[in-house]
Image (tube, rainbow, N blue to C red):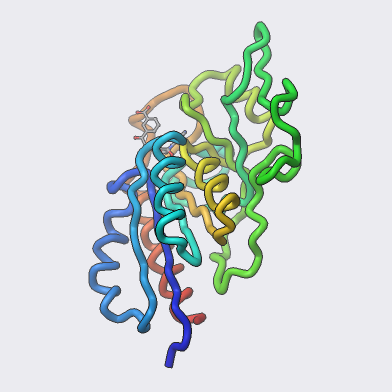
Length: 227
Ligand SMILES: O=C(O)c1cccc(C(=O)CC[C@H]2O[C@@H](n3cnc4c(=O)[nH]cnc43)[C@H](O)[C@@H]2O)c1
């Protein structure tokens, strides 16, 4: 017998990334406990689309938990393509000013303060620790960019400044929206490629999508099971 209601949002940039999960949900939804809802939002690629679409959704629907799933680039070449990570904190890694050959973010140039809400010491940290289930995955720092990194100087700069595990184009917008709206969240990423000089032939998108979707399905089943 289930006594409480639960609304869960699963969001991704593209349909391609979570198509298998969408298929699973069609069959799983009728078996959900009464008063449970699981919805999918395809928010679009990049921070602008994610911030607007997710912000609008959260304001209207106010889910209890939000999960962002997506593929990502790994800075760590020891991580296998198709492996999964949980993003513990996010950084906006290309919002700022160029000072000759130096990049300065908005904290460096004093336009933002390191602990202004919802930041914790310059990062968008997932500070929620009361979710009923958290996947047991390696926790990493994410950087979010508008321009996918594909040159040695850029990769070196990001490694030095943020010590990131992964790079995406939406993670920081997701953390920002959920922290601001006070909605507990998880960002699960599956490694499709290494962050390196662009060579799309080396990307393993189907492998990463399969791993991501298996994990999303497992996470939803665990959340329902842990109610
Ligand atoms: O063709 C390209 O050069 C290209 C570059 C980045 C992403 C794509 C995609 O088709 C996927 C978009 C989606 O993937 C995430 N993603 C995956 N790997 C990376 C990365 O190394 N750096 C940043 N983002 C990445 C991203 O979140 C996008 O939503 C094609």
